[in-house]
Length: 133
Image (cartoon, rainbow, N blue to C red; front, side, top):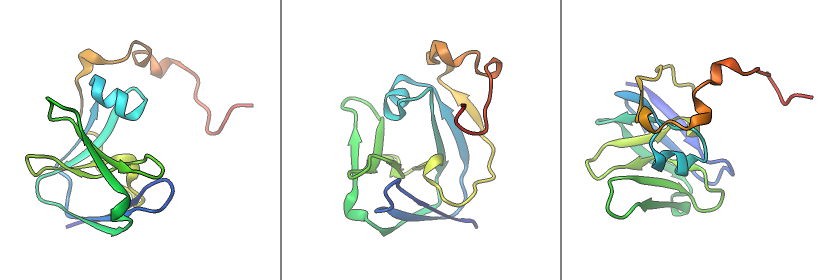
């Protein structure tokens, strides 16, 4: 069994996940694009891992889009995405919220039919290790 620790950007919320992740999806659906303000969400999923809030549980809030299964939790102070337990009991952890290294490689891209047009040729653009000058 693996333990993972994570937090929000402002450091108010800290959490621990005890257990292993079953899958790691890069989701390109419109809901995840809106949630992240980016091309896709990067979420880890587990049917068995346990989530424990270490600090700041009172700063965690959740939103479920009416009429959908789409739900997300976030820090109400800084807006950082945080783990969420879905209606089906599945733990969803935003990969970027982890402070410990996760060695699980992404399982798959999903909802690629909704992929942003500007996300299709990213391998062809320049890369910089830091902010370009």
